[in-house]
Length: 293
Image (cartoon, rainbow, N blue to C red; front, side, top):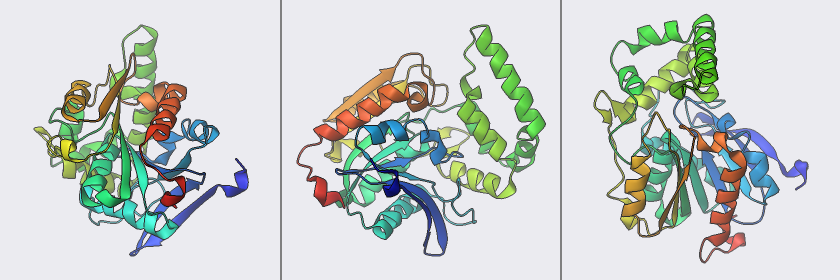
């Protein structure tokens, strides 16, 4: 694919800036949606592999994340899904396939619920919104007073110390779980006050002390879409059992478990992940490649 077709930009939509990277190709638009506190950089190793396989990639920074605006606006799932819809309108794309990781999976499912005529398929990666259980650290971060604690644990010195602990744990064979490189990047970013405020507002929209507040499991059988679920069997954030339960509830659902992977299976084995997504897109029924643009 010619690199001149690659475009990264910042679209101003309804007063908010949405940062994105768009790499056109024939076929359905695969919108990559990251998790809470992360950015489209989480897909950095996956994007070139998808492009090599001829996939049209649109990677998005959700509002409050990455290069997008960090205002004190609405960070609910509905608002985030609407922002994705607005970006598609801006770029002139009518339909898409959504690939969502963690919170991004919840946004993808919300998009399919709000705009079913625009959703051709769903790939849910260690997705939120499929059960109540989640990591106790995220539950704690949703509590009042987290604004006072997070600046301390996200200080560069503290993040460096935590990262060193993670390296030691890995060296002795103890899975570091929440101490993955992507998690450390998210934690370091929270030292920035606007980023921290957006993170907490987004998190509190979907998590409280009891766990995940929103579940889409009852809606999935009505989606009438082929749904691919990808999970790590060592996920410390959202248990793989959520994936098994969702796959059992979806008439046209398939779960692929990456053995040894944590909460970021797309980063654990990007080659396998890209192959799964490309194969999923190729098998979508009734897609006219020209109809997505």
